Amino acid sequence: MSSFTEIDPRKKRAMRAIIYAQCAGAPASIFFINGFMLTYFSGLGFSSATVLLLLTLPNLLPVLIMIPAALVSDRLGMKKVGTIGLFGTIFGFFLVTIAGSFPYDLMKQAVIAGIIIFGTGIAVFASNFYALLYPIIPDNIRGRYFGKMRLSWQSASIILTLIASALLKINSSIPMFQLVLATATILLAIRMIFYFRIPELENQEKPRQGIVSSLRHIIGIPNFMPFCSYLFLITLCTGSLPWIFGLLEKDVLGFEKGIIVLMGTLLLIGSLGGFYLGGKMVDRYGTKYVFLIGHFTYGLILFLVLARDWFPMPYIVLIAICTAMFGLIQAASGIAFTSELFVLIPAKNRSLSTAFATTLQMGGLALSGLIFSKVIDLKILSDRWVLLGKSMSMYDAIFLGCGIGIILLIVTLGLVPSIVKNAQWIPR
Image 1 (cartoon, one colour):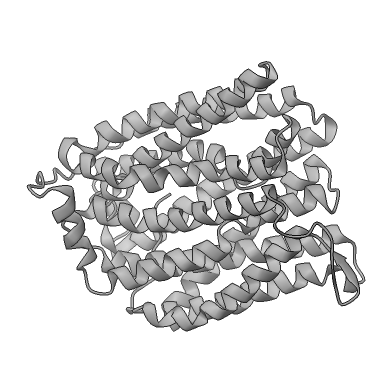
Image 2 (cartoon, helix red, strand yellow):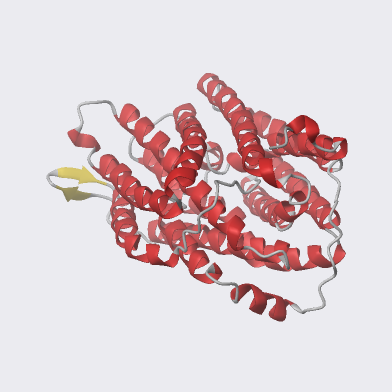
């Protein structure tokens, strides 16, 4: 097996630039997951339902944009399209950052506009990123390299999140949030510098098919659509749960802002273990085994949250354990998902096929967030209900429903082809 030192120097430089670029760009996106944006938007005066909707927007936009952007990438060039997306992320995130200084009505408009621009940029950039990297990373080290890349950007995000959590414990004012967001905006600009150093080695043949013909080809790939359907369904049940954790901590358990962000950091730390454990399990047992364990583990985590009043420990300890476990199993399942996807996607229309699978995954996440946002906004679920003599909240009802759904979805494991393949990582 070739070592890193035997790789072509141009590719070696590109591989370093890719990791540096992802380390610089990851914190901005992670802030929408780890509770930082949740507390920032809450501090700006948005209701819990609106906060959940705002957090969902960056995942809704790729559903509408990623496939057309991938099609354009296959025709105009991946770097050109990706650069446009990166400019969008910088401007959109900057707008969200400065919105906190505006009058309330203007602030709301600026936040929404900034998120839309940021989410659009993410979708355009991500539509071809895997296809851009594919010819750069040698096959025999691809899994290890993508694992190293994930470990790198997750570590960078954890460090910045820990710093943010410490700062918020000292001062949780809006200007302090803006200081952290401004740092992430600068990092987005730095990512652009490293992105320019990534060569576009593969000159893809310009597709002669229209988008309908291209999609028809992708849909006809053996096992591809059943697998994407499973991916959509499991994401629908689990994708927005980290946000529900944050709302439970804020509205019911009364955690401080810094503690909520710290819980989000534990989600990231758990995912680091999940990437390693998931890769080992996929290599040894196959993907379907990992998916099966994931279903039961998700159910166990949600049961522990519901049973928090029966455990002789502080809420913060139990929620910390559950959050870390959730991050671990989510990451392990992600390794299994991408290991299957690497086998199923064809060489033809590579950008489009990857974007199609990612779009369905993001669609499940976006639909989940939209549904729960509307459920909270319309107060469809009772604010207070009783389970075995213990008082529960509407968020607990969501956990209960998702837990039941996750267990029932075990029957859909037949949609997973479980092709034998070494663990692989989608390069995010």
